Each structure stands twice: as C-alpha cells, then as structure tokens.
Image (cartoon, rainbow, N blue to C red):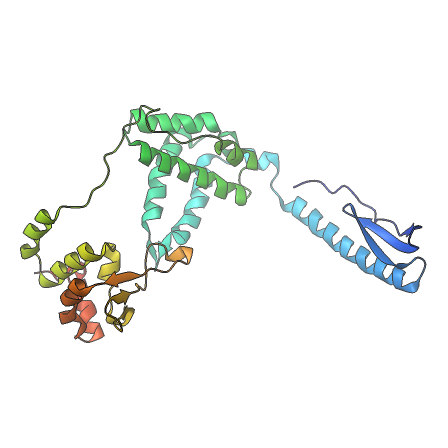
Length: 296
C-alpha cells in the first residue's frame, strides 16, 4: 500500500474568481460556500472530519500489512498449507470435494516437490517454466493438460497475493508466461475425445439393469452429463409441451449462476415414462440404485 503523503489537514482557502471558500483533496477542489461564511466553515469542518477518519484507516492498514521481512519467511509449502484450508471449503459441494479440488492437487504437486522449500516471494517465470518442462519430459503429460495445470499454479499465486502472503510482483510476473502452442512445443498432443459409437452402446445395454440402461439411453439422446441424468426428478421436468424441458437441480456451471436446460424429445420421454409414474421417492431410489450399492 502506498504511504500517506499528507499529515496535516488541507487548508481553508479563498477562490477569488468566484468568491467561494474552497478546499483541495486528492487533487480535486471542493467548494464550501461564500468565503468566510458560517456555512462554509461548517462544510469545511465536515470534510476535514471525514479526511481524518480516512487517514486513520490508512494508518491502520499500513500497520497491519505484511512487511518484506514477513514475505521472506513464508515458503511455498507454508503458503500451500494455508491454501489447502481455503480450497477444501471453496472447491466443495454439499461437503464433498469437487473435481476441481482434485485437479488443483495434481497441479500443485510438482510445485511442492521442486520448490516447496523456496521462499514464495522468490518464485518467478523461470521456475514456472522448469515445472512445465518436467511435466513434458518426466510426466509425459499432453499439451492441454500442461496448460491447464500451469493456469492453476498461477491461480494459486493470485490467491496468495490476495491474502497478502506474497507480493503482487510474483503473480504479475507469472502472467507473462504464455501457454504452450500446438506445433511449437515438444509436449505431445492428446487425441480428441470422441463419443462412443452406437454399436458398442447397443451391445452393452442388455447387460445393464433396467434403471441404468434407461440412464444410458437418455444420456445418449440428450447429451447431458452423467451427474445430471442420475439426479433426474419428475418435479424438475416441465411436461406441458410436446418437448419436455428438464432443469437439473444441480449442474456443473451452477456456481457461475447459469441455468441448465435439457430438452427431452419423444424417444427420451418413452424411456422415462415408466419411472415418472412412480412416487418421487421411489423414482429416486430406482435411478440411484447402482450408486447406492444396491446392484445385484
């Protein structure tokens, strides 16, 4: 935080061109009323009182902010320990760690292994590139995975800056490390993930329980995520039109305050109909049987 430049109150002045009393704060003139009037002195006193409060708050913040010496005493491993406390609650849903929490652990592991004893304030772009090179040569990760993990390392340091655990210069420097680009790195390219062909799905369906087979078919028809179809409830489906509309109670982008709409056409409706006539509680048990250890 910048130091406080002015220690004495700004002066009550006379603006001769207008005949007004004026006081200058932070490079801006505040007109108070006719110069010498009681109104102008009252307004001046109010502004100076607010100025004194602001000065006191700034002094308090300066006194509580970490010094350079404190920054030097924190190793990356120590910062990680504090970050874990934050991440375990932030990246969780209904008390269960999300996939992002697991991905953050994978991303930060080489940082801890290579630079855990390094002072956090001394971490910079070259060290980040060294971690990235290990991901290429030792871990044999694909370019896309490496770029995502490097972004998570940057996010970790950005959080640390916000908590005043490391100086902002660390996070600012890491932003200048560009991601790996296709054809301009020795990192391997992962083949694109393609959908399973229908012939293989059809071969598997007869070996599944009726409930799981229904889930698979609905997912294939709608393209929804497994977690969305497993949580399907009759009360979440609008059946007023020819095409039903399913709005999952929970979904991947819920934290972004985005809605999720999944249309259900005639084929999906035919698959779901036998289950929708059941009471809500029974429907949920039917669909979650496999995941509750009830498969026989």
